[in-house]
Image 1: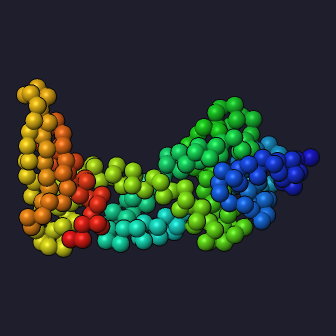
Image 2 (image 1 turned 45 degrees about the vertical axis):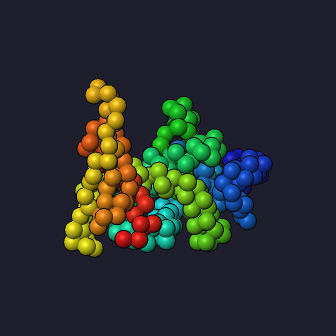
Image 3 (image 1 turned 135 degrees about the horizontal axis):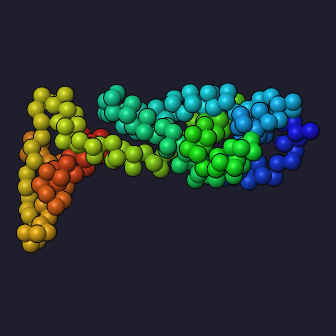
Length: 243
């Protein structure tokens, strides 16, 4: 018979190893064990295990949205609502949660049905991201919001700056223009500082300035890209510029 309690007893040592990777020790490990149970596994063992991690996933999704939203609000107090929303979405989207799940080898601990396991289910972003959310939901039930928030922030914090740079680089000049114009009703200017190298491999160095103050620099093989890079750098350090 494969009940949840039987799984818990059988996998106790394995669960402890995962707790070390996660950075959280459960008071009640049954929450953690349940977070590993995929619906395909519970379907195959329906007589004994009628529950899976889907409700924990639902809970964890809500906890992650709040935890990440608060972390970004506290870290970037001058960032506007639209940018905060886009950055939070980038951090909690399926593909990124799957990356974080792989960082802690979450796929190794999942209980999958035979078919799902045979089709490389442990590597599927959809399954990994849902399992990561389920683990956060399990922590919330076991230790409350503060515990879940602390774990979420610990695993997401190293990615914040990288995701921010990815977002701002898409059309940095327009975004920087909006950010400055919203407050001062005028935009920045771009100055070509120098161009060096042979004609076939010239490098352009540009500064972005506002009211005779240099905000950031950017370089590239063409002037337009150098301006975008300068704007992207200015956006990334915008809170530190104290404009």
